[in-house]
Length: 349
Ligand SMILES: Cc1ncc(COP(=O)(O)O)c(C=O)c1O
Image (cartoon, rainbow, N blue to C red; front, side, top):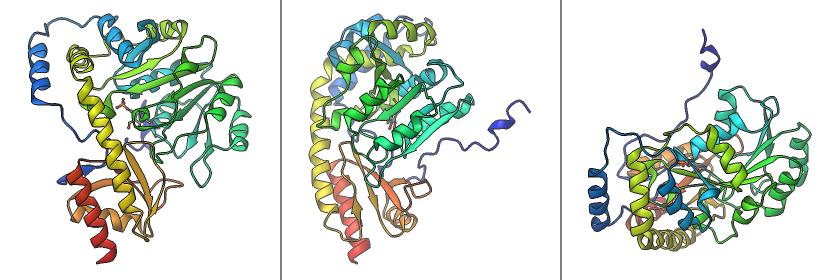
C-alpha cells in the first residue's frame, strides 16, 4: 500500500542480452594495464575493511581537484553521478516547483523527480536534438527551480548551445550541466560558470565513462558555498573505501592511460562514424560523446539482427522522439570493425 504509487513505474532499463560484443552502455572498452591493476590490488589489500572510509574524502577530493584543475573546496562526491542527480532533485529549491530538462535526455532526471513526486517541466528538443529558446521559455513559465542539461547529451550525442544554458541559469533556475561525456568533446566545458559564486550553475562529472564505471564515482563541481551546503546533506559514507582508494590510484598513476584511451575512442569514433555514414539506409546524428545515435526504418529489426551477429547496442525505439533509433557505444578497434562489417552485411547483403 505504501509503495503503490511505484506500481506503474518501469525500472531503469539496460540491455542485458548476453553478447560477445557489448556496445550498449557507453562504458570505456579498455581495461587498465596489468601494472596499474597490480598497484590497485596492492592498495585495496591494505584497506582496513572493518573501518568506515574518511567521511570528508579529503584525499580523494584533492586528487579529483588536481584532475579537474579546480580546488578541493569546489568538489563533492557521489556514488556515481546518479546519486548526485538524486541529491540535487530532492534538495534544490522548493520541491513544489518543477525540475526542467529536455526530452530526449538521460532518464535519471525524470526517475529521481518521479520517485519523490516532484513536478517536472519537460521541454522538447528540435529535430536535430538542439535546444530551442521558445521551448525553454515555455518550460520557464512553470517556474522551475532546477534544470538539467546533459552536454554532450545522452542518447543523442550532441552538445547544447552554451548561451541557452546560461539563459536558463539567468532566469533564476539552479542549473546543472551534466558533463558525463565532456572528455570526448571538443567543445568548451562549463567549469568557469560553475566556479563563479551566485551563478546558479554547477557541473557534474563521472569517472564511469573513462574506465571506472565499476567503482561508481560521480563528482559535483561548484563554488565553495554551494559545495559546502550539498556536502551537509550528502550521506556521510556514500563512497566506499575501495572506490576512494582505487580512484586515487588511477587518477595519479593512470593518467596517461586514461588520456590514451580517450584519444583512441575519439579516433575510433571518427573512423566508425565515417564508415557508417556510407550506408544509405542509416541516418547518423553527429556526436561529441563516446557513442553515437542512428535512425533506421525499423529499429527493433536492426537491434535483433545485430544481436544475432553477437553485437549488443542500445535500442531506443520505445522512447518518445527516438522511434527507430539505436545508440551505439564506441568499442575497441576490432569490436568496431565487427560492427561495421555486421551493418554492411545486414544492409548490403
Ligand atoms: C548524461 C549522464 N549523466 C549521468 C550518468 C550516470 O553516470 P554514473 O555512472 O556516474 O552514475 C550517465 C550514465 O550513463 C549519463 O549518460
